[in-house]
Image (cartoon, rainbow, N blue to C red; front, side, top):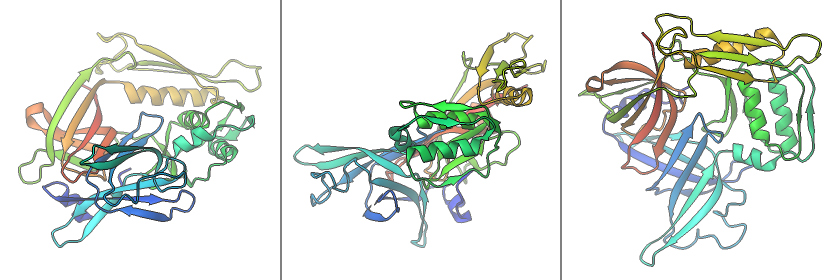
Length: 377
């Protein structure tokens, strides 16, 4: 789901425009701004839908006065609790601006770069999922059978003691088999597995809220953005296409669950590409490429079948990866649906889904993305 911006922002990013960036250092529990880095000239934020930690980033801090260089454990840029919030946006012709939040990052490292003539610091950050992983389980957590996924995720959050805002309204919910998490297990990994059982993404969004959301459907959902080489409103600078066959690209899925009563057969679902017009048709040149997923959260044949069908829909058709470089647009997020037009590369309004986005905190560098497209005949 694209971040909401004004119409004039959408127009501005399709042509040459002036970029502005800002970084706030904030107190994690209240969000209070402790300090604002006004003049930011380097850094980057990457959002990767396929990574466990979805948002990571870094920012270069110029400390001409020496007031920010950390020496004590409670100093502003020490990696012991404070967060930073990067923003990037557009300065319009009338001098006003519009900024887009790019995430809420815990400060993970501060590197001091002192060459004598130049002095700067680079802070690195990860979104709040890193905080949940670090907290771990201080005791065994048992989640009873027939607990809903949303409730189970909230139980894990409570067990870690990490305070987060949540938004699960756009994600499906279902009841699961019993789960036991032990001391030493990673709470964030457990939460991701629970969300996957509902065919959902689970991640911290641009303002630090924990979101559970259905996976994007590239064919049915609305288009969020256009990347094009149009002469009048063209934001595309360069593009690379890669069409590949991967060992992780399956056309036959078997999903098995768990029978909580242990008195009937194990729940099972099977889905495969039986469309003769598809390049991944199981009886065609592609052949059969099977994968088995065992998900102990699924307790019925219907749940397993729905999961298998969903996994098939995500993978049938040959996969193409596109990597465009385009004029800065920090509002583009992972899972946004983007159409790409570049006639020389045989792309004419092709629908893609963003798996990864990278936005610079430098006013002179472009944005990049990794887009995924499914080819079908």
